[in-house]
Image 1 (cartoon, protein in one colour):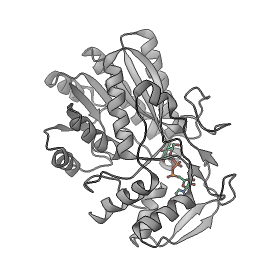
Image 2 (cartoon, rainbow, N blue to C red):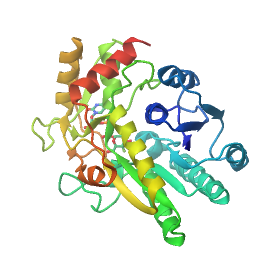
Image 3 (cartoon, protein in one colour):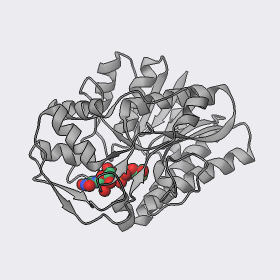
Length: 331
Ligand code: UFG
């Protein structure tokens, strides 16, 4: 079985390619390297000792896509490619709508031409907006607070409409909570350029002394210690969820959404303290004002994914902190 992975050299994409290859799938990656490096392809090969096909191309380019579908007999697609920075999307909404929606439409149109009607889409818990109760179930109302989130919600809608119009499609919408950690090998992981937006990359840059001090956004949230609570999930667990989703969509047809989270909520301070303890490092922090758009707490009810995909997260927060730091130390 051959899986086309768009954005396959990114953080979640690369870990998913490893899990797919180790489960016996063939992998074809298309990535324009706008937020990743070509070496990742070699690292995936090194970890798995398997061959992969890699195309440095943009998913918006339909002719390039057609050539890939002509060259390979694709059985299913996992669509990761897209811009993903919340703040940047607020500053440059047109860039986000153009890129994320255009690439998806091109991909779906070409897939349809080649009668490939099985796709896993990389969505996000951001589509739940500010949930009224916790844990979050898939049937909760959907809304977003920024253009990045809106692109995820719009694409979910496009995929649902597509299934309604043609019941031969088989679609899984995977709503990720907060992926952190890295592959045990230390070869692939997350290392954003510049000043990170997300918590774990920021903690790491303070631990390695690249940055001075972590700013914790708010200590007056309605949580056990006042700092924001999130459902951090090990990226390898998340990657395994994609393999399970592929198994599911290859079996039948439909369009359904699944939460990929652990079901556990940890605060910013919980994560910082665990990171300090397991890695034996210092992480200086100070409290700052709340960040616009942030919510008190967000964690999944992952039981539907367990029931339907036979998947659940297995790795704990200590392992996430160790593996994330191990990757950075090896860079
Ligand atoms: N935080 C800090 N300081 C920082 C960065 C983050 O205190 O420097 C706090 C935030 O306020 C929040 C928590 O750490 O309480 C997690 O923040 P992240 O930016 O790491 O993650 P978010 O939950 O804000 O957003 C992430 C992804 C989004 C995705 C969303 C889904 O970045 O792409 O999860 O819920 F949409």
